[in-house]
Image (cartoon, rainbow, N blue to C red; front, side):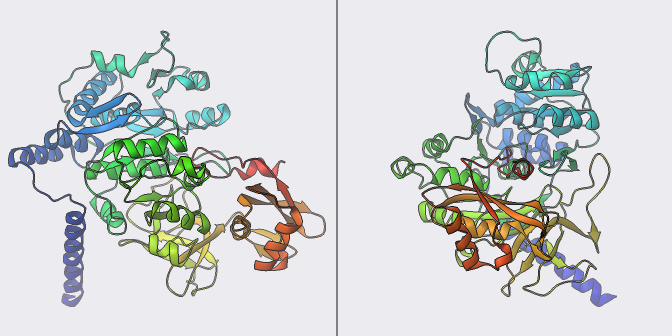
Length: 540
């Protein structure tokens, strides 16, 4: 028993030293004025590790520094703290309190951040709605989750009309200046009490919806990540405190929201644009001297598609890190982006349910394009067969993950498969001999053609490597002879025909993985997170 206890004590000491070095390396332990440090510590003790605590402490440590910069200008940490006090007070006057759920359907702007912080001060729960939802999806989610109120951008007024039946509604962002029926956040803030409210007995929770690319979006609920989770990321990606961060990934999505929570710890200045435009984003990087730029992979592709003189007309030397997540990162896209902007890419593989599972840095992406990387500190990653037995390197199986951020179950009921405390990601993949993970595809996307197993992503990656192919997606269609056959949808960047692409696949993969049909399209249908909507392709 003593030896076991000694090992545990050593591990705790080692973990503590590692955390200290990591936080110091990120600039989080640098000294501040003693009086401000004491007041900030008292705020953290009062509010805990929450959005409310982060902005309350930020108002003490750096009151005059910008907290959010968006299309309307900048707000300091002191202004954010007072405005969210006012907003929380006004929402409480409207009957919203601890334990209530409030749905948020907003693009990336100050109203999103202020709502999340104000709800944190009330102990209310936040339900993040996808801004790309169609009416039926939105109706299904609201019926299941039963939020007490919906806060939305004015552009979604017609879309949320049905969801507002017997619910309160408030407008977060006004596009048109005519008076609407619903109160705006600015009106609530104007009339709210600026005094700091009493902290709730319990922190509110955040529900993030799955992408819904294979069915109705599910709600995945979890509490705020702790210091250990942040250390896990900071040990692999050289993020820094007080950076200016252009969050182009949608804030309602797992990756965008994850970076928002990291920004709380790091005291980041969040730079936000309501809509992603590749050239406008480059201009923002130059103007604000952005050093960190979280995106989804398709955004990198859109940037590389800009004419060379446009893309290279902006000064982006301030960029240190471009963390990506949300969908697969093709190897040629990774190397192409780094050839243009330097070795700044960091690819995070994970899901709404397991958060992150593996991280690939620039060296990984150079040496093994297409890799998902290795598990960060504090994360366990295994490849298991159908019986739950670990598989050796080179063999494909189901990907299972263990960390402190596993979700607690879907809000409508149900969980992911668990084996020995590890959760299934829903993907299949394999390890290479060097320990790097490669994701081969979704376990429910496997195509069985003529008795052979094919994962679409492998074929998609080969097609995307062709010099005249911009992007590709592969789906299964019914076939009388083979049961299923592969059908590819391709967006080209230059002249190429179907036979040439089939020959290209055959040169690199087994013959049974060659698509029987290639359809040329102008663009692939994508979700707000950049994931290809294969259900739409299957119906073409």
